[in-house]
Length: 356
Image 1: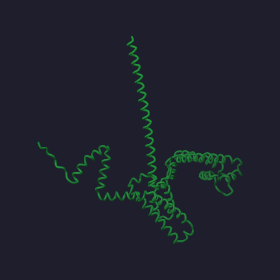
Image 2: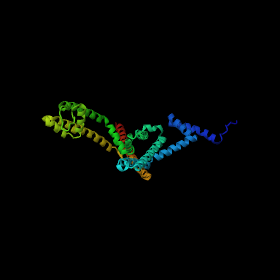
Image 3: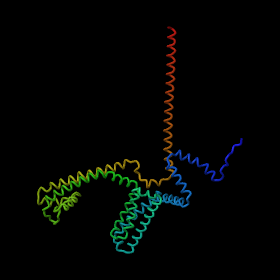
Image 4: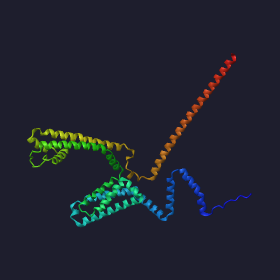
């Protein structure tokens, strides 16, 4: 009896149909539906010339803008830009229109470079750029630099572009993150300091508000003046005001000494202790080393490190296997001795039973 066999598919269509079950089995093995969606998206990108071209451009932008040497170059440009902003405040620049114009043009070039770098980050990351706080910080600074450039007064705030160095160096980022982590404790200390300020502000206003000082200043005539004076006193500039008060009231030294002891020796030491605690936590982290410059190491060195780690792990596994084999051999020998002992006991019991 003849058996009908369907004709084999020809060309690429047959290969595609033959590969479909394999692809389905692979997706079934991988499990989640998201894998199939990702694969379909990759197929769509690879089949669409425009999307394929955009994907290639996106990868090229990511490779360029995130290259360690490019990041070092950006840090150098930020530093040079900040240095030129400082030099631009001198008279030989401000009084010479041509030199001042050259500095303005150079600053515009730096801003264009930073904008191009940020645009490449956006092409590479897409809207996920807004999930990175440091990149959002860069975006805000660049956008403000462009939007406020026409305002002469606010242009002085361009120096804040130098803060972008923090986003490029891992050590600085870790330090800022640690400072934000200790904000709750600093907030409690700040609340305590404000309470102390308010108490002593009201006290000094009531005690010394009517006094007349030599320079005619109103140090304690109102609560806001008293708070400002206390803030200045907290920086240890309090001897002159205290002596003028003591010339009129002999016991005036007591509230001054109490305020200085509480704010200068207790509260500020608490703040320093909290900050030092945060810095100590940072120093104990193993990943504190700045990845900006260490990432420039050669791939051969990284491969050697990876090879050494693999060799140590293999050696450890071999030692564990040897120890396990020794334990199994000991267990087998103990089992054999136990069997021999049981056999001997069984023979002795049989001999004893035959006698009786």
